[in-house]
Image (tube, rainbow, N blue to C red; front, top):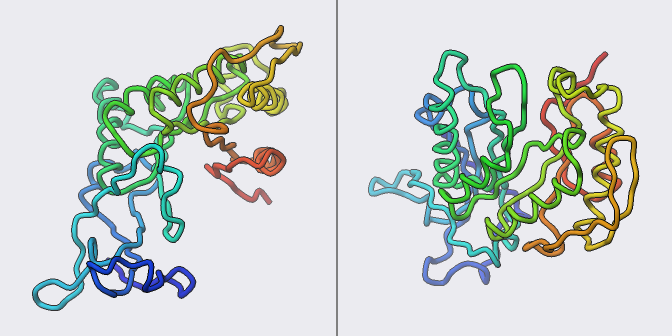
Length: 288
């Protein structure tokens, strides 16, 4: 356990502090929970988290030594969810998932639900859930279905697709499912997109892997137009739209948060910058 003060620019001014709780300095805390690691080893990319707090969560104990209390998730309603404090590091979980190959798949999926619940209790801000169709290892084929169930077990944590492989889906259906989840979760859904990481997935669908990034870019442009309320007519070599529009606009205005995966190619980062979207760096590397 390590304690270190926040940079001066992130310190809260005396006027911003609660008079009821005095003028104690705010601290940034890194907690490594071995119990959490033991339970979910290999199923998430990281299990440590950082947060800023005053003496609600961190303060001297009876002996005068600085100790850590159980972090409590902030009570933030849907309308204020995107107005969360800007002076702290926001953290999340990425669940591909990676269960042991000898584990019962039914139990593995339900343990992933428990992981999301624990993530919320421990103060994580968001969780991303992957989509895979081959290999028999990463078990979730539809992150949207998983998110719909996880949303009923949680109240605060943001839930993102990590990712929807756009070349595998018609863009109108991707946008429709996103909007429905946005309403079901009251604004807690995020759309993570990518071209599809497993060549075996594309092979089973009869998709040339060399076309996947181009298809992702084309589909993304259509999805953004649909979410903006446009009526779209578009003909491609792999999908077609005729006067297509969403019959329901998003709960989140102007639209839910969208992020693009970037693994081995700069294409995702380039698209994120072009459209002003978020970036999911899942396995970025420098190949010599």
